[in-house]
Image (cartoon, rainbow, N blue to C red; front, side, top):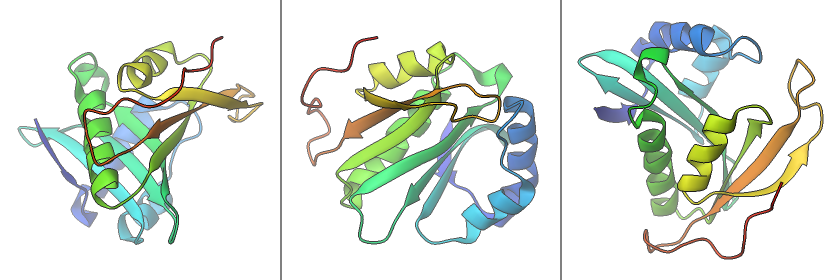
Length: 161
């Protein structure tokens, strides 16, 4: 599996994955193009043999030490193969090298597979947003403290359900 930054030529494949992965709250072609072309947005792809296995998108505001993982999607045929974990680790490594001190994300209350992945990667749940998604589902907020030491564990216990 190869992980690399997305380029404009990847737009069609990204849109196909987006449409297949999400039933709502999808990124449009225009939004994907915007993220591809705008500084402070990192869109990484996981590929194998030229096939798009997944993507992860991080937003970074100028002068902020916090990055926001805005979206991650893995093709149905590639799930359970470590694609999501590889993308999340690649974003965390890039963020740490760029001097970010923390990553944050939101995840649907009913997406237990993603929650388990984030927990395994060291993320901690720290809050929620009510009725965050188009269908009214709440979102859990998660964060990952970063350091220059990739083996360091985040401080403090995670929130309990």
